[in-house]
Image (cartoon, rainbow, N blue to C red):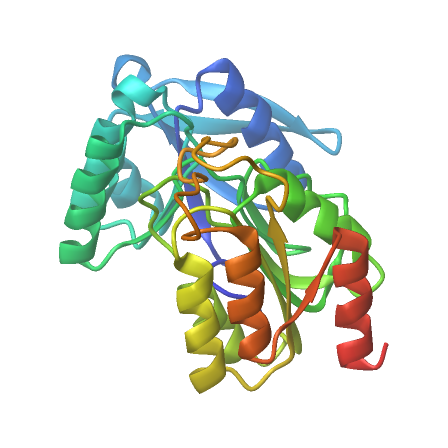
Length: 296
């Protein structure tokens, strides 16, 4: 099995006609993702051609998300829309009752994220992101920008704030493979959290162990540690990025800022270890801890 997406997921791409949208749509199709349409009101009624494994495919472009859902039965939308227009795209997908919306866009104003997060919560819609690499269930579906050829299907679940560390950990554990790897994003306001993914992995029969990657800033990892202590029975190992980050500086992600002792990598490491999570000093060491936990 997998969490949140599988081979039956029907995906539309908001922003498919742009350069980034076309590039990553091609990659998602090559990974086996069922992409059933794109959305662009100015190009409604046209198609975009892709070549996948020597097969030519034409993906229809619809004028709105509601039209795309009605025409294709889509249950996932992935958003490659510039920051200035991202809020409108997300709201449109929420109003069309798309159950899962994956927001790749970086640089969305926090105010915009707060508004569409609130609306999604009210409507019961799951968001992944913004500013994230998306989600992949290897061999089944890939929604976002995660390279699909790093690893194959397997028994590890991965949830990470960092996109590049998602890819690194997938590579480190390519011998075991993954049920699902999800990059949740590092902005101050995100949809799906570490805890959401931990709960889903705990309930997924295919997932036998979990890797959780955090980073400095906020208290998401501390809250996840408390959740693990009370609710997770499967082995969990962790990695926290940012031990050398200077105090008071935003590092990389908009949410990665440390104030005093709050949000430091050391504080997060201590909270996780207190919950029984072994925390590696490097991605490679973290992968070794996961193998040891599985007896692999």
